[in-house]
Length: 206
Image: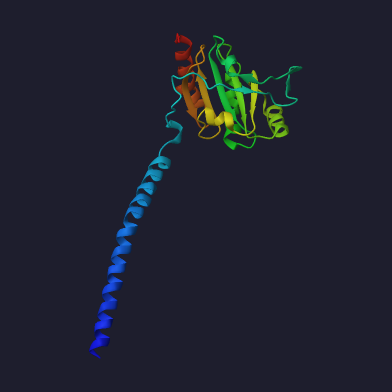
């Protein structure tokens, strides 16, 4: 009976030590998970339209993008473009969009207005899209772009640090990224953010 009690106590002690050891072993993992949850919460709970871009003040990424097949405007084929087209002395806007993007449709009227501003050149990058659907989208809603490049696999978007379509970049005449707008443009942000940034870009010398 005594031996049985001793064995029981030893077994209980071993179990307690095992639980304590397991807890100590798992504690670092639990801390990492908790910190990850806090980080993700802080990242996504804020205003994603104000996320900073590491590309601000840097040259545009080197890209060469073909145009959307059979996209025609005013009787002429709408071309693709390369980074060299963003370094020709005129302030440019590069807008990343997709036909499947609801917010892209919401901001399209703003783009149509910007496309009429003769002080700037508006370029589009069609992100992970179907050519036929992209063509239908622009033919239906209107094409505000001078040129539209196709980024079928999303490789150019990676170079540009795309967070998610739509996004718009303001480029200096020498091809330097001056401003990034994440999310859809509205009439309000056009007046309060985009136009002031365009005017600053027009005065920039680099």
